[in-house]
Structure formats: C-alpha cells, structure tokens
Image (tube, rainbow, N blue to C red; front, side):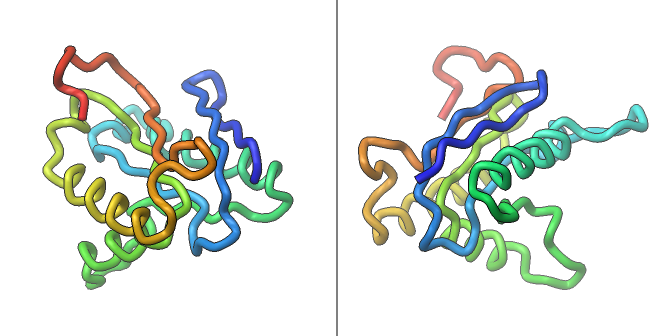
Length: 145
C-alpha cells in the first residue's frame, strides 16, 4: 500500500491504495469542458493528471499508470476501451464539477468500476475507499452523485 498525494495548489487528493494487482493505478473520470485550455494554457484536468502522475510515481518508486481518455486512438471503440480501463484500475478518481454531474458517461463509468470492484474485494478495501472525489467547483446540494 502507498499513501499518494497529488496536486500543485489547484487541488490535492490523498489516496491510500493497493495497486499491485491492477493494470492501472488510477482512472481519471472528468468532463471535457473542465479541461478547457482555450486561453492557451494547459487544461485543469491535464495539469491535475500530470501532478498526480508525478506524486504517485514518487511514492510507488516506479512510473505511475494513470488512465485518462486522452489515450484513446482514432478509430478505437472508445466505450469498450473505457470500460476495460475501468475494470483494470485500482482506483477511480472523479473530477467533480457541475459540468461533470450532467455527463451521461458518469453513470456508465461508475457502474463499470463498481461491478469490477465487487469481483475484486469491493469498493472498500481494508477500510479504504477505491473511489475519490476531487472537487473543482461547488455543486448544488443534492446534485452530486
């Protein structure tokens, strides 16, 4: 097990995960609008992914394996690829925002991860959740999943 910290002033997340039996250490679920880089900079999610990758790599003593849909290739069956990545991820990191809760993909990603987790000991292992929310903006009460 490793204690993992990620973030660089934008947000921080502390994770406690057991990653040895998974293809990916984490899967980042987010809304594409929350990664807008139209001002010429790097999108928030891209920066978070980079920072999380560095923190996880340092703590694990090896290159982190963090999956995000930017790894999809042209012509690939994206639904099948996303479901496969979720099924083989140690943790699900949800970048929570009002835009995110409106996504139809969230429920599909959550279900795929939850179903796979139940086959591998559950969403909670050793009193630690395998799902983490990173709040990037406020969500109205009762709207968060």
